[in-house]
Length: 245
Image (cartoon, rainbow, N blue to C red):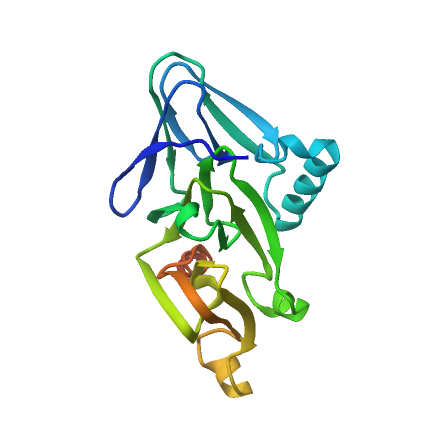
């Protein structure tokens, strides 16, 4: 299914949102609960799946929904459609401070792998699925998990990163990073989890017990402030303040 062609504008700096212009009969698909505002003539409906399974029948849609359940995400995606006769706008806000990354899948060989919490919205026709790491042990010990989302298609997708954003280009190279700092990568890059070193480094080094290893040729997007790290610091300070009372 060819993706709808949509125009957009990124608004804001540290806490961003994306405003999408929909021509008549155009649709954008978004995660539940991320809509900020929408103009008249925009109709929205929660549906099971991303809409790309329309030609796959009931069984294909059921498989797609089952995969989303494995990621811990809602089985529903919200479809926003312009039912009017002129261009209308709908906006989606990032869930925590950071940046929204607009990416054209047609320029990324049709596929992007991303952390399951980073997907925000995409043009109708984009397939929102999951992919598994080859080594199951990586999933149980790798912090953010071995289940990653796979975005496939030829249209625009919007991914959210916490804090500042870094894009690294690998040319048959290896890059190691904190598992929570990984946002997305292209399909020319292989993803794995490895231990952070000896027992002393793993328990006292402050960098976590495991690192993500990215190897190959392609693009990697890295966030400086993963939500898990932000939430951990907030909880740490809350409990410290309570102990002082």
